[in-house]
Amino acid sequence: MKRRRLSLLLAVPLIALTAACGGGSGSGSGAGSGGGGAAAPASDAQVKYAKCMRGNGVPDFPDQIPGSGYSIKDMAAYEKAQKACRSQRTAVYGFDELDPEVFDGRVKYARCMRDQGMKVHDPDPKTGGYQVEVDPKDRAAFEKAMNACRKNLSPKETNK
Image 1: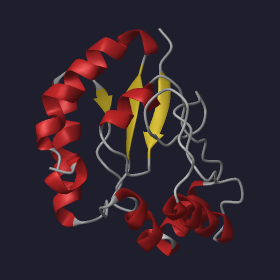
Image 2: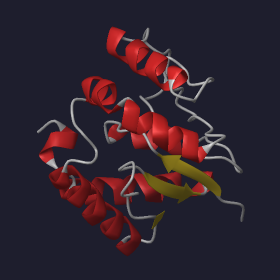
Image 3: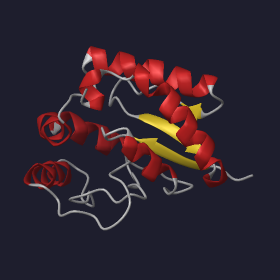
């Protein structure tokens, strides 16, 4: 059974994780984004964030991440750009992934997901993102686990 690896390195509304897990690349890292259907035009904040990322060493960073994810070719450059563009990123998503409350919620969420049988790594202390490995055939089980574990995330992240 082949598993696809997907790194969720962008802060995304949790519902978006479902859309992101169906895609991604087998060899690179990806970032989740909004749900299915036609994508809405990128917001001004998304465009500013993307321009910042491109200007800080990630030249192919898109204005809006597609639902299938984003392949990261140079993790060191990505992490450096994330630090430089932190305020723009926070403006896009409405919270800071490295906020201790958000980060702690993500650790609890990852632990809960593992307890539910999912392969979810703890968040990266440098970016706040975390990796999810899901076989597309296991999508229903993933969604069930995600719904069971959502309560562990910070209200800052879930907009509650």
